[in-house]
Figure (tube, one colour):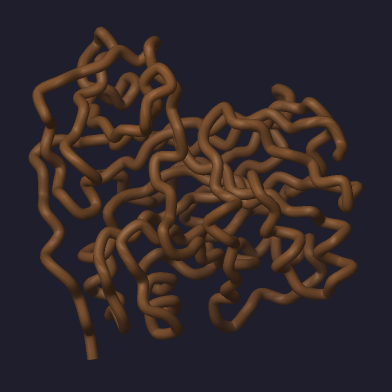
Length: 279
């Protein structure tokens, strides 16, 4: 039985939702539509929104702030969960020493692992290897369960970029992934939620200190977005603000101390973070 909450609103122009901190004040949310930088106009003004658009709809309050006066934060802070899909690119499954899975492999990252663009990835003392994993992330927009593939788009609020940071040595040591992927700061998201992005053949890359390490197309996914939404929602109820990471392509690798990692998806944007010193 399909259970869906209120219908998803449609808007006549592409929008990007940003979450920001204006000069140390409480975080706020804003709206932009300029494809140049995802903001409201060429003067880089952010239109401030009333409440959280996941619950209150997209309603500007009539005020605006300048980009250079704020700090961008993770565009969503999941109140519930971050669901991840493992081995969803054939080349990555191969480099991990496994076969292509017959059905999606799912695991969870805690919501406390989420950080935003420009934030530092903290290298935990108990690990000697911290890896990057570039991913497309889905932001869920409504309560849903058992979503049929043909209705997947009804439950998506938008898309953002993610880095599924992984302590690779601990993943191998533990034989399961919770500790390796669950540290604070191990889920950078951002820089915005694009409500009109349509995944297709867009390039996805990870660039470490200026050198491309991962490069693929979103169409290389083994399981596409409708399949992922259908499968995950059969397992667990999805809530507004839940995030689903859709898997990473081949090329994963370690991020040295003080390195800079940029995840990019064509037409969606770039997410850049720095890595701390070890421990």
